[in-house]
Image (cartoon, rainbow, N blue to C red; front, side):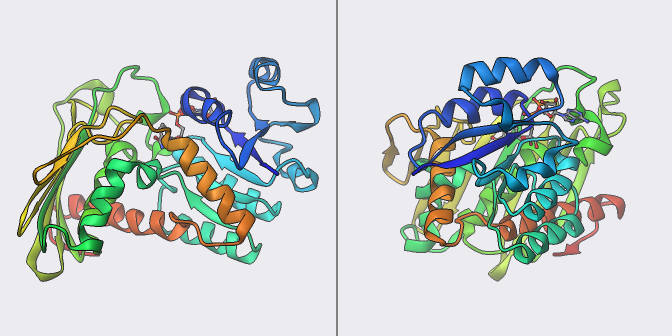
Amino acid sequence: DKLGIALVGLGNYSKGQLAPSLLETEHCYLSAIVTGTKEKEKEWAKKYNIPKGNIYNYENFDDIASNKDIDIVYIVLPNSMHAEFTIRAAKAGKHVICEKPMAVSVAECKAMIKACDDNNVKLSIGYRLQFDPYHKRIINLSKENTLGSINYVNADFAFTIGDPTQWRLKKDLAGGGALMDVGVYCIQACRYSFGQEPIALRAQAFNSGNEKFKEVNETITWQMEFPDGKISNSTTSYAMSVNSLFVSAQKGKAQLMPSYGYGGIKGFIKDEILEFPKFNQQQAQMDAFALNVKNNTDSIVPGEEGLKDMKVIEAIFKSLEQNGARILI
Ligand code: NAD
């Protein structure tokens, strides 16, 4: 039997990726929607065959508690709303997938983990790349010691942002600029490339003076220290286009470029050109979590993964406040 998923927030990611992928999932399906926009109710109900009783808004959201068609709630709202809706979903007794970044502070991440524990529900973060075959090969480098000890990782992800009025440029909704958005992928990639946790970092911010970046940083670069003197370097920005992951190890190099898309990833590990058939990351991610729920097993990307990244994010902001000082994580 397929588990029912309720999508909360029917913006670009839900519409373009998650809902279509839920037509291909084996262990879960789109059973309900939560939206603040009346017009979307009809459109989605028709397209995805969702009964009237399974359509909610942000006010009556808590009523999902009594809806047997909903096993998992997937939070796809602006970043500063992730904590509130994850906690409300947990209190309603539903398992939760929350989009990245997990929230906008370490304190929120901890509260989310606690709420899910207290209510005996599972929590997973929308880190789709951990299911992608290219990234799985990178993750395996440290596990299998294929290239010997890894010395250096460079992970950059940036794009040029459009509409100046969007929530991604508003501090209260986004919690920060590109770092909270695509920068999270760099933090993740550095952590899983090394297979270790960073111990300290330094960060630098750059602003061209563009009107768009009144509330959030335009570009941030940062360097992390890993155990045994290993280092990483990263750039994230809303004002340039970069998309790459580079790993240097004792016995060779690995690279993914482009690295972080829904598809179209290219790369190599030493002499091997990586090539995998077309792959649906979101389908794999949601099916894996549905199986975790069905079998009562641990999520591959639990809330703790999001919390670890948020600790790095807070350390980056702290370093920026202190003019690039070295901050222990
Ligand atoms: P979006 O702007 O397209 O959608 C956001 C949705 O939230 C909209 O439907 C909007 O109506 C709703 N919303 C509710 N309250 C709002 C408010 N106060 N202000 C603005 N919108 C409000 O954004 P998106 O690209 O779908 O991103 C949503 C979340 O998903 C973000 O946390 C983002 O980081 C994450 N995301 C993840 C991936 C991924 O690959 N894992 C990709 C895209 C987005």
